[in-house]
Every structure is written in C-alpha cells, then in structure tokens.
Amino acid sequence: MSLAAIFVFLLVSAVQMLECVLDLARRRGSISDDQLKLRMEITQLLKEASALSTPSTFAQAAKLKRLAAAKEKELAKIQDLNIKGKQSLHEQYDKVLLISKVLIYGVLILWFWRTPVTTVPKHLLQPFGRLFSWRGVDAATGRVVVGILPWLFLTSRVSKLLSEKLAPIFLHP
Image 1 (cartoon, helix red, strand yellow):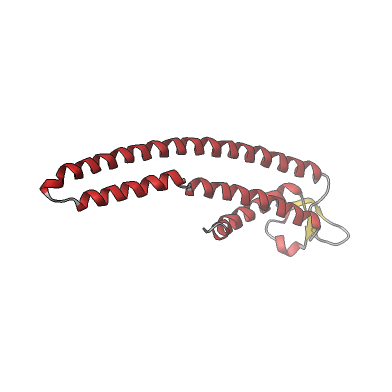
Image 2 (image 1 turned 180 degrees about the vertical axis):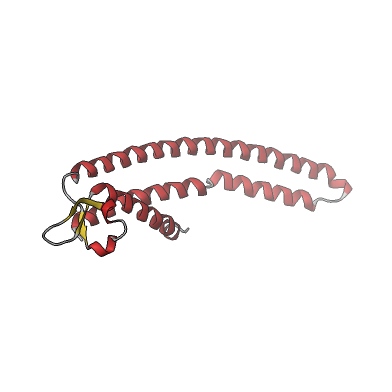
C-alpha cells in the first residue's frame, strides 16, 4: 500500500467527516440563552397561574396566563429568526464545502492522472479487477494497478460510511 493511497484516503475522510459534522449540527440545532430564559419564565408563570385557583385570585391567574402567552409568542418569534439565520449560515457552509470538495477532488485527479495510486494483488479484486485497474497489471510484480478515479470512488464511499457511524460518537454532548 503506497503512501499516496493513504494520503488520498485521509484527505477524503476529512472532507466526509466535515460534511457529516455540519449535517449533524444542522439537524441538532442549539438553544440560545435567551430562549432558555424565556422557556423558564413561561413555565414559572404557568406554575404560578395554576397555583392561583380560588375565585378571588382568578383575575391575577388570568393575567399571568396572558403574560405567559405573550412570552410564548416572543419565544416563537425568536425561534423563527434563529432558524432563518441558521439556515442561511448552513447553506453558505454547504456551498463552501461543495466548492472545496470539487477543488480537492480535481487537484487529486490532476495530480494522480498519469500515475497509479496503489497496487494490490490480483486475488483481492478478482471479479472487479478490470474496473479498478489503471493500465492493467504491473508486469514486474503481477499486481493490479489502481487509478485515481476508482480509488476516489472507493475511498469516498468507505469514508462516508465511517463518518456517518463515527461522527455521532465523537460529537455526543
């Protein structure tokens, strides 16, 4: 196994891991301190309103419920603004990631276009040897020479699978 194959695999894995981390961050979202504070105020107001159950304190309980409803509307407004801002931010990150991915893959293809990435024994690629071979078999060693396009395809699939499985483990809060 050559160092070029390991280098390509690590580079593709890093890009795939970054993509998976951004996807997880988008799905999880985050709650700001203001939102958490408003939620706590709302629950406190509703607890106080439920504690006031006598007819003489009905007006005060209704006032607390209205105040809680107003705070819920404020919380919904903050969440809508937060979601819109995060969506545009994630869209920008996705665009930058896509452009960098295309550039990295393009540079790798240009760099390794005329040279093989690695060589492997024939028996490892027995049914698909011709698909992965660059210029057939190395005459000196009898091993299959693997080109950059099949190697990028294989490493991107393997690293995507690994990053989908490993990213939630590493990013567990």
